[in-house]
Length: 352
Image (tube, rainbow, N blue to C red; front, side, top):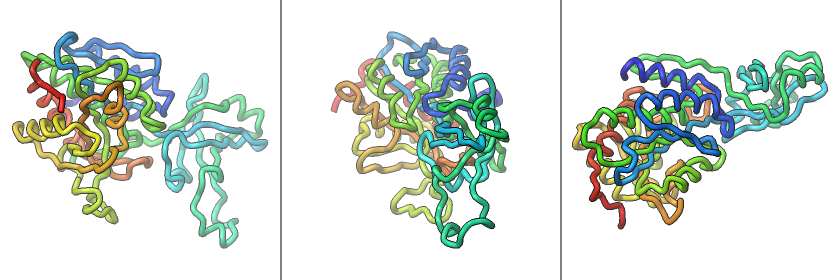
């Protein structure tokens, strides 16, 4: 991966942006997109980068830029902060984590607390943690001091810096799905360097995916594209306990994962597979007999229906403080999409 792209990815991953509070990370994405595309936002907070406006067909690329997080719900008499999850959490991974609360005037650091095992009753030790039994300790002496630091409705993310691992792999929070927002913009950048592109391509950093696929639904309705490609993570199946007969064979470094699902357009999926083969890009295929659980679902059902494909990248430890991906998969996903888009012409028909 080129150095400039990697530095941009690292900035995206380190910037807090839980669902509904994506403004800071969206600002970074828009600033990068302005280097080679026309950029705008919408009332939901979606970001749009358009290349070759007025061309055809119009194709939407969507990678959601929000991440799972926490939200302050109450401050108790001891000054301990109670919270709920923004998006889907396994509460076990929250215990003992450091967090960054995005307060009105500053960032407040805290730690997730739980009753110590030494003072638990024997039956308590056997129970899994629930979010309602956890709290955030921000070091306040009492409720009054805590309420000067944070307010109900403030959001937080886990305080986890990016970690560079061997073999071109990284660990970070928010790879689900800053990775997707990065890939769609990287694909657009690669496309901007091609000649004779006829399609109008709009990369979208969509919002609020983790709480209901909301941003992509609004963006797709407004754009009314002929076709779309959603980019997201999928479960890497090269760790213990994941049955490949159920989830497929998607190892880190095996390339982008092309979806073939009941609610995806076979026209888009087949052309993505053909593009990968023609450009000698390694890939795997993931089957879905119903919905995909990604923005592709919302886009596909927008308006009278949009021909939608799905490109994913293998991700270990999804929805945890340390998700792990292989940078080569991200790079190849962007390259695959750019090759696919470069092969479209004015006669491309997505009707079936």
